Image 1 (cartoon, rainbow, N blue to C red):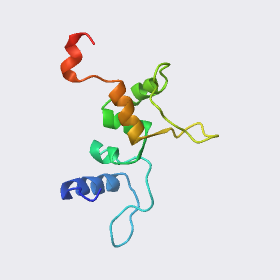
Image 2: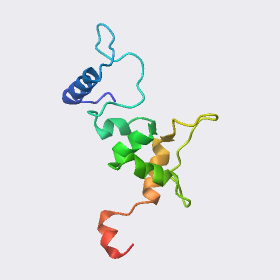
Image 3: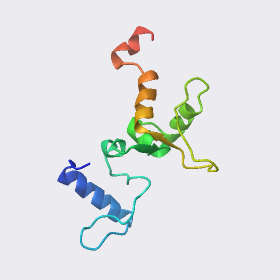
Amino acid sequence: MADITNAQAKRTRDAERAMGMPRHQGDGGPIGRRQTPPLGVDSFQVFAMEYLTVDQVARVLHVHRQRVAEWASLEDDPMPFRIFPGMQKGAFISRDDLIDWVDRNSIPLAEKGRGR
């Protein structure tokens, strides 16, 4: 993500400040890694991550997280979320798996009215 604009970086800093996230002294960056980017972060920045959470997928696809949970529970071609053994929370999906699933389960807008 080396190509973010100054405006995007400022929005991220402002969101982090609003969330009370701690910072390194000197460089102004957040300490450690956060699970979910702040709400002010663009969908593109979330999508640039290799693995996404349910909330991040919902943000990228502009749907409610409940819709993502429904897609993950489909009997035929569920959204391929993964979880570590012994865990009950923390589902994630790789960006490539998400792209493949969306390609299989969506149609071009131009075809919407053709009865597909």
